[in-house]
Length: 132
Image 1 (cartoon, helix red, strand yellow):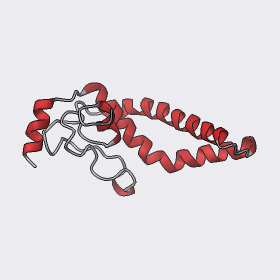
Image 2 (cartoon, one colour):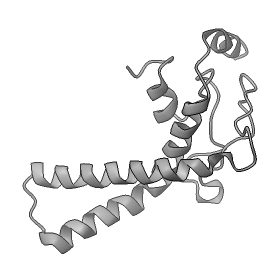
Image 3 (cartoon, one colour):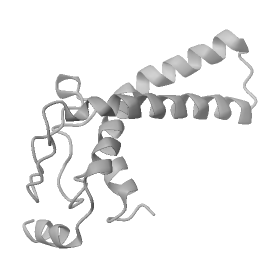
Image 4 (cartoon, helix red, strand yellow):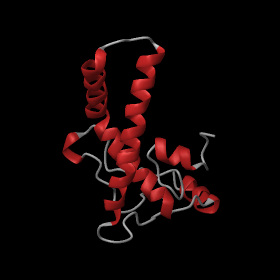
């Protein structure tokens, strides 16, 4: 499920959606100087990540969905562990979690958006791996 060749691997590991070898972002999502800046192309297989000028604007919609999923997950975890903070406290915990996870949510959203348009290619992955 999380092995190379699955979309989930390239999304969560922030790897190239075609070869699963090259890095998708220029730096770590929490590096605030280059936060969530997507590379021009894959350093391993040469896939051009930006197929049009404003390509990643669509990832904002995905970001909203991922943010809602994180908020629901935090709320469910609070319920499971029986932590009763009242409405204001729960709201504060959810907002805090969203603020702390904001760089990760943005990075994963861009990877999800790219995975809609690019497919994994076994042959390209073999070629990219042989260039290591």
